[in-house]
Image (cartoon, rainbow, N blue to C red; front, side, top):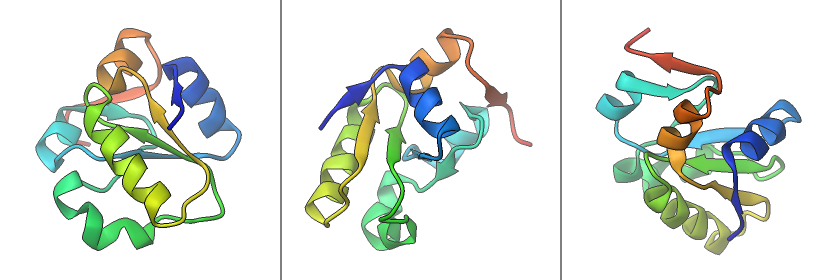
Length: 104
């Protein structure tokens, strides 16, 4: 599966891709990329069908490992346009990209 930089991930989201965060709720509440949809990895196999097959999906977690696993799972389920955000939320925030801190 292709890894993309945070900047490339943001560009793809701005062009219509869906940013999918697979961390757990408490991690998401601390900080997340603006506009990310949360489907925790612990619920992923039960909920992945909520994701559209006709849109590119940019997978994100804390550092990139869990989102890569979720992305590979999606590809195995027939999702064609799936990329992994290298460095995850930590890299996204470090690069100063739009993020939400704390519960909103």
